[in-house]
Image (cartoon, rainbow, N blue to C red; front, side, top):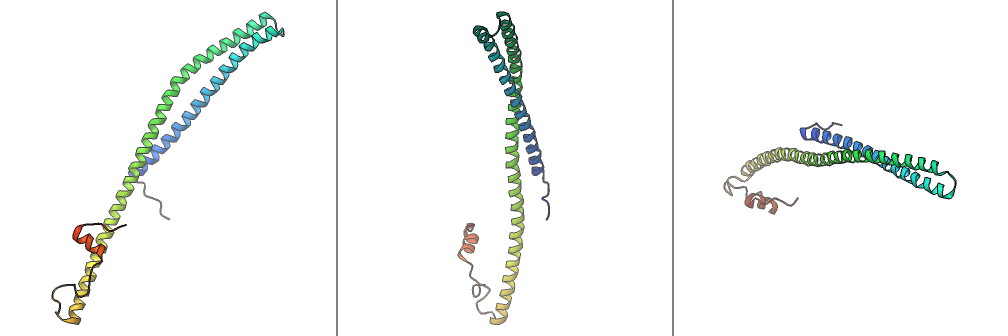
Length: 179
């Protein structure tokens, strides 16, 4: 089986799809990391609230509760700063992903257009070949008609050939046949 020839549009499409996959992987990774930070921040905030609840329940002293709460709130504040930084990174990653998607869509359109162009070229050659064969066969058929019938009927193919309606419409009116 022959492998497809890597045309410029197919090469561009492969590169665009590769870039899209890379961007998707980066986006997934960045969103996962951001989600983990958000979860950790929520856990820190919950730990700060739990320290107060434990003190009110009498299970820990006021000093221990204050230390736990302060530590948890500091963790939450540090995580908030990381989340803020991550948001800018996420925006950039998401923008790169959107650009890669748009580029891949354009590359797919270009590859389809190139494929259609190649098919048109092949069909044009096939039509010229068929037309040449048809005309050669009509010339030979006319020669045999004259040989068998003499010159009766004049210089016309009318005596032995009548084109189909679709062929007549194509030749007389340039109306394409129904595909």
